[in-house]
Amino acid sequence: MCALPEAERGFSRVDAVAMYSGALRDKIHKLKYGGKTGWAMVFGRLLVGWMESHPDEMEGVDYVVGNPSHTGREPLQHIEAILDAAHTEDVTRAFPLSPPGGHRLVKHAETPRSANRTLEEKRAAATAHAASLTWTGDPSDIKGATILLVDDVFTSGSQLQQVALRLRSTGAAEVRGLVLARVPWSG
Image 1 (cartoon, rainbow, N blue to C red):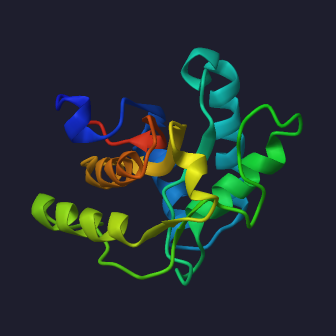
Image 2: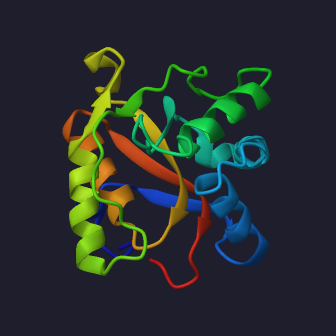
């Protein structure tokens, strides 16, 4: 994925806080599938810590948005919970994070999940996911904007690609990715 030209992959770069393995993998699963909300605060702190320690990568970012989970997702909307925690952690408002409940990218419809699927199934699920997203702000806000798209795990990159392409097609000038974890073989 990362070897594709930017016009095909949609995003200019993807940074990862860590590799997806061991304890981090376990804790992401506890939040995502077990609803252990305390991990959202830890992950929110990790994201803000990464932003603070990478000012060059944050330069020019107009919006930090999550790759949203469905509004009815059970046990919780984990990406939104992480970004709400990041907003709380960013006490000086140094970063363009939306306030809790004010997420700019929302997913109102359920789509097929991509976890534990083949690459083709992941790609199809990613396309459906991106098509189901809505930008909640003023549509002119996205025109010419640089967006940092946050997700929990980068596996095949299909979902980040499709969401980035969708954001670019609606006017974003650049989409960068930031994930908590990247699987060791992805790219």
